[in-house]
Image (cartoon, rainbow, N blue to C red; front, top):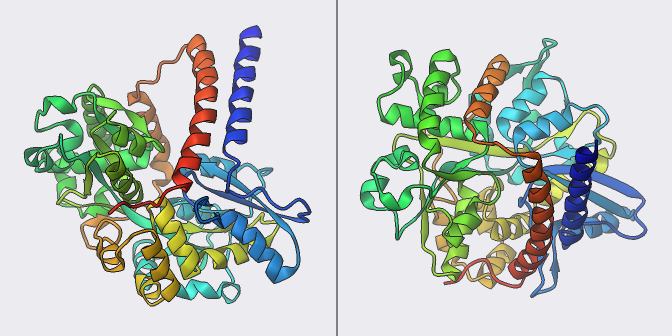
Length: 454
């Protein structure tokens, strides 16, 4: 019991310090707030403002906007999650209060199957007309009619408003990774080019779905797939699961483990900038952030999706049936679909808004914002990392359904997590101090500078 108490105390210290350190520009509400909006979103997934110009972050800006529109003070409770699986677990706990959630498309599918989402009234979200229709068409084509556990039929596009989108690919250090290395595609994550500088310098996603995409496409490149799977489209392959495929995936992930610097969700871009890693399985938005930030440190990074194909993903706003503040949830979605707010978001976090780029390009204030942050608008909107083509060799993840447990069991078996009680205690305490200091200085440093250096 004494050991447990010490661990719990350490955890308490960690979260107390972290909350104190991170309360800058990401909401917090007005002193006289009479309403509350509870949001769950990914970490590092929304603009937090600019100290240099005095512009508030989008959470604080929404609180002011809500007051101006309604005459009511609101406090936004902004919570984050690291993986879709973590978010689903929280959503399925009946006493977890949620007004608005931003999961990925395959998780939205799972929530619909379980009958957990409210159909969106688009009449109350007029800015949803700004959304790129190619995204909506792709979602409709991939998911079609979704059947719930109770037999109800769902059209996903009636239950979500796309927020951000992009690709899964490989971020790499251009001064270490060679052209020969790049020619191996996903094999770069397994150091197929035998580059000695890459051993122990490769990062994988601490996310079963993203790492599964990489490993099955690596297997396809290497001719290691069971024959009946080799002819599948990328869309079908990344969503196929059975014992044969899991055995191949497990063996290849175990083979890779000795080459890794580690598994990450949020810190890969920072490790790449610091030189702790030279290769990272990355989301395109994190890649853009790292490439631009790396220039300030004379670190040169680039990003690509291997020729064989990859994953294109869409994260979107959904409203759970247990919503308590429907008006505020709808107004927040509408607020985020405004072109000006969309571009502030993009320049801050690196990810691409689902607001159509044609809408953005025609907005004078958007162009002024880009110029303020030293972007060339023409280059910005023609960047293939930021605006990739939606082609046939780009697959969208779907819910694994009943096979999800088997995939997670395989995943947990290959990750080298062996932590002692002492390690937990020391790690939490040291992490608390580092996190508090790191967040404080990093947040303030980021807010004081433009996101791009020409």
